[in-house]
Length: 129
Image (tube, rainbow, N blue to C red; front, side):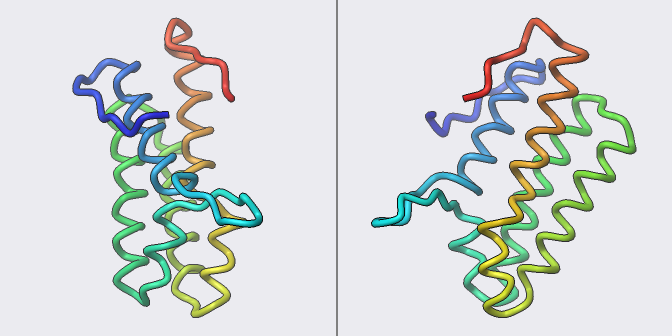
Protein backbone atom coordinates (compact mmCIF):
# COMPACT_ATOMS: atom_id res chain seq x y z
CA UNK A 1 0.00 0.00 0.00
CA UNK A 2 1.38 3.38 -0.99
CA UNK A 3 1.45 6.24 1.43
CA UNK A 4 -0.34 8.69 -0.83
CA UNK A 5 -2.73 11.21 0.66
CA UNK A 6 -5.45 11.89 -1.91
CA UNK A 7 -7.03 15.31 -1.95
CA UNK A 8 -10.80 15.59 -1.69
CA UNK A 9 -13.62 15.39 0.77
CA UNK A 10 -15.42 12.49 -0.88
CA UNK A 11 -15.68 9.30 1.21
CA UNK A 12 -13.24 7.37 -1.01
CA UNK A 13 -10.50 10.00 -0.60
CA UNK A 14 -11.06 10.26 3.14
CA UNK A 15 -10.94 6.47 3.45
CA UNK A 16 -7.63 6.29 1.58
CA UNK A 17 -6.11 9.05 3.76
CA UNK A 18 -7.20 7.29 6.96
CA UNK A 19 -5.92 3.93 5.68
CA UNK A 20 -2.57 5.50 4.74
CA UNK A 21 -2.22 7.17 8.16
CA UNK A 22 -3.11 3.92 9.97
CA UNK A 23 -0.55 2.05 7.87
CA UNK A 24 2.14 4.64 8.64
CA UNK A 25 1.38 4.60 12.38
CA UNK A 26 0.87 0.87 12.89
CA UNK A 27 2.38 -1.29 10.13
CA UNK A 28 4.90 0.60 8.01
CA UNK A 29 7.99 -1.38 9.11
CA UNK A 30 8.83 -4.99 9.94
CA UNK A 31 11.04 -6.12 12.82
CA UNK A 32 13.80 -8.24 11.27
CA UNK A 33 13.88 -11.84 12.38
CA UNK A 34 10.34 -11.99 13.77
CA UNK A 35 8.66 -10.21 10.84
CA UNK A 36 6.32 -8.35 13.23
CA UNK A 37 4.75 -5.16 11.86
CA UNK A 38 5.42 -1.88 13.67
CA UNK A 39 4.85 1.72 12.75
CA UNK A 40 5.72 5.21 13.79
CA UNK A 41 3.46 4.87 16.84
CA UNK A 42 5.82 2.28 18.31
CA UNK A 43 9.05 3.86 17.09
CA UNK A 44 8.38 7.54 17.86
CA UNK A 45 6.71 6.49 21.11
CA UNK A 46 10.14 5.43 22.39
CA UNK A 47 10.95 9.13 22.85
CA UNK A 48 9.51 10.01 26.27
CA UNK A 49 6.55 12.42 26.35
CA UNK A 50 7.25 14.18 23.02
CA UNK A 51 6.96 10.95 21.03
CA UNK A 52 3.65 10.08 22.63
CA UNK A 53 2.28 13.57 22.00
CA UNK A 54 3.32 13.44 18.33
CA UNK A 55 1.66 10.08 17.75
CA UNK A 56 -1.42 11.22 19.69
CA UNK A 57 -1.72 14.19 17.33
CA UNK A 58 -1.39 11.88 14.33
CA UNK A 59 -4.06 9.59 15.78
CA UNK A 60 -6.28 12.61 16.41
CA UNK A 61 -6.01 13.38 12.70
CA UNK A 62 -7.88 10.13 12.00
CA UNK A 63 -10.62 11.19 14.44
CA UNK A 64 -10.80 14.60 12.74
CA UNK A 65 -11.20 12.95 9.34
CA UNK A 66 -13.95 10.75 10.79
CA UNK A 67 -15.72 13.86 12.08
CA UNK A 68 -15.57 15.33 8.57
CA UNK A 69 -17.34 12.19 7.33
CA UNK A 70 -20.26 13.05 9.59
CA UNK A 71 -19.78 10.13 11.94
CA UNK A 72 -21.87 10.15 15.11
CA UNK A 73 -20.67 11.49 18.43
CA UNK A 74 -20.62 8.00 20.00
CA UNK A 75 -18.19 6.71 17.36
CA UNK A 76 -16.04 9.82 17.62
CA UNK A 77 -15.91 9.51 21.42
CA UNK A 78 -14.90 5.84 21.10
CA UNK A 79 -12.18 6.77 18.64
CA UNK A 80 -10.91 9.63 20.83
CA UNK A 81 -10.96 7.22 23.79
CA UNK A 82 -8.79 4.77 21.84
CA UNK A 83 -6.25 7.51 21.08
CA UNK A 84 -6.36 8.79 24.68
CA UNK A 85 -5.90 5.31 26.16
CA UNK A 86 -3.00 4.61 23.79
CA UNK A 87 -1.39 7.92 24.77
CA UNK A 88 -1.79 7.29 28.52
CA UNK A 89 -0.47 3.74 28.30
CA UNK A 90 2.36 4.90 26.03
CA UNK A 91 3.47 7.43 28.65
CA UNK A 92 4.43 4.62 31.03
CA UNK A 93 8.14 3.86 30.48
CA UNK A 94 8.91 0.42 28.98
CA UNK A 95 5.41 -0.97 29.64
CA UNK A 96 3.86 1.62 27.35
CA UNK A 97 6.30 0.87 24.56
CA UNK A 98 5.47 -2.83 24.76
CA UNK A 99 1.74 -2.04 24.86
CA UNK A 100 2.00 -0.35 21.45
CA UNK A 101 2.45 -3.81 19.94
CA UNK A 102 -0.81 -5.06 21.44
CA UNK A 103 -3.14 -2.05 21.60
CA UNK A 104 -3.22 -0.49 18.15
CA UNK A 105 -5.62 2.40 18.59
CA UNK A 106 -5.31 3.55 14.99
CA UNK A 107 -6.17 0.11 13.64
CA UNK A 108 -9.20 0.01 15.94
CA UNK A 109 -10.23 3.45 14.72
CA UNK A 110 -9.79 2.45 11.09
CA UNK A 111 -12.12 -0.50 11.73
CA UNK A 112 -14.76 1.88 13.15
CA UNK A 113 -14.45 4.18 10.12
CA UNK A 114 -14.66 1.26 7.67
CA UNK A 115 -17.86 -0.01 9.31
CA UNK A 116 -19.38 3.47 9.04
CA UNK A 117 -18.36 3.86 5.40
CA UNK A 118 -19.49 0.36 4.46
CA UNK A 119 -22.91 1.11 5.95
CA UNK A 120 -23.40 4.68 4.74
CA UNK A 121 -21.34 4.65 1.52
CA UNK A 122 -21.49 1.04 0.28
CA UNK A 123 -20.11 1.97 -3.15
CA UNK A 124 -16.79 2.75 -1.44
CA UNK A 125 -16.58 -0.69 0.20
CA UNK A 126 -13.27 -2.47 -0.23
CA UNK A 127 -12.25 -5.99 0.63
CA UNK A 128 -10.02 -5.95 3.71
CA UNK A 129 -6.68 -7.65 3.26
